[in-house]
Image (cartoon, helix red, strand yellow):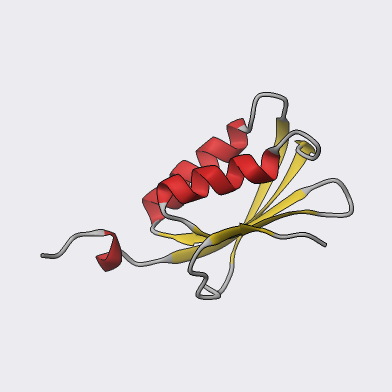
Length: 99
C-alpha cells in the first residue's frame, strides 16, 4: 500500500521564535505537538531569549506544527518566527535540548 506517511518526502526546517517564549512551557508544548504530528527534531531555549526548533517531517505535518507553535501555549506570545531549510539530521524522535 502506498501513500502513507513513510512514502511522503521528509523536509527539515529550523525555526527561531521571538516573543514571550521562555518560562511559559513552550518547549514541552512544542514536543507534545511534534509527537502528535509525527515530527522529529528538537527544541531549545537560546541565551538571547528566543526558542529554536529544528524539525523534520512531511510538509503537511511541518505546516501544522508551525501553525501550532505560532499560537503557542496559553501564557506565551510569539512576535515572529524566522524559518530556514536545513539538512535533515535523521532524527528519530523529538526531544527538548538543554544548554
